[in-house]
Image (tube, rainbow, N blue to C red):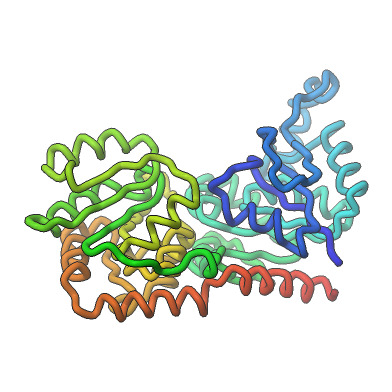
Length: 378
């Protein structure tokens, strides 16, 4: 057996299905949680350590020194120190942790030095922002480079992210691509509603929901095609206003944020999944969107962009259509094509087969465990 500490920023976050799956199931569920912030919700009944708990007087007094020291030595001030560091070390020893899996590279920055001191092997998992937007800060690049020798291994949801890190001189000899995956036993095709489209995700620049809406309106003019949006965010109200302006408010439904089961039920009945992902102005990108993997498992034909790890999942012309980022005309044409193509059922079947063979999260979880064990010689 092996006991793992899962390092994450906030716990518990319902939408972070990939992290929650590791907390609940990695090494048979023999896990504890080390988080930056704990919101009090612990559905898995795990021992939890909150790194950013209120500091004592002594640590507050020492904060300026340790902030400067850690920035000079590690190029980051994220590291615990003083009583907080001692408490975390006590927690890891008491819980008899054998290995640490830090979700997101930025979280590994805080844990790697202490893990080395305690001789606990530590791995990290890059998922998107941590290997894109975060790299805009030179100090993060330096911190990552200094951290790499401290890690036993690196995982990423896509080759794109590993390549992005490598472009900044950040490499690890023991690096592996393991997508987050999808539960292909729960996400299965249902009876499809004709001319149905779905978009899932935050209403933020990276998801380009306004481009999706405009292209849908243009591609399906004169039809009864419908588009459902699931998610919220700063661009939600502008999207609602745009739907009115485009005259498609009667064919577009904005559901807001919804539970995962609601998303699953919609995907099962949807023909076409739309996601016009782009690189945001601040450099933020996707890794390999879980929503696309879930859509494929449900037999949806995906219309998306050649962005980040998406081409590693969607085979253009076989399981969906891909266009360049910000190519609104191309996106429009792709939607029109998939809505009228007689091969759509075949594409749907291929999408499902791809999910079963490449994105089964049970298989991927075992692959992750096997790689950790192989690295540690277990």
